Amino acid sequence: MELPDCGLYRTTMAHPDHPEKVPAGRLVHFHNHSHAGKPIVMLPADNTSNTWTFQTGGYLISREGWTRSLKPMKLEGFYLTSEAFQTRTGMLVAPGQMVQLGYNRNAEPLVFFPTRDAGSNSLVFPSKGMKVSDVIYDGLRPVTTRGPYQPDATVN
Image (cartoon, rainbow, N blue to C red; front, side):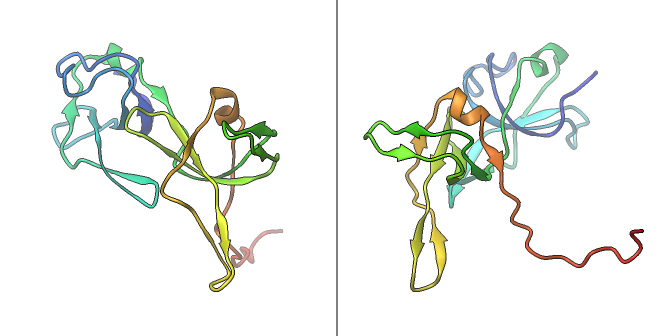
């Protein structure tokens, strides 16, 4: 069975064996392996700091065709916008704006805009985000937050 990579996905079809538990249009974490040897999807359990943790148990996948219906989603995390857009409240978002990307249970992308906390010199992301269109979502570019690192001394 040729399987997609492990990661976040949106279901585009209901799970063939558990349609009431895993309907179309849901955020799932897909693993192409499980203790039972079959691929598995897990539903969101809890959201902390705009990032989901997923149920420890899930729903095994026995039909290869269904895995091809899963739509891959970007990793939750920090991104830069690639183009300007206007919010529903009329505010303008400039290109290069840093946002945190998250999702609701229906796998709709949400962006969270930071504010600066001068007292701690930190960026603070709210718990309420804004839904964005596919055009804005597709244009998000990941931000690297690894910080300084020691270069490999063997590089020529």
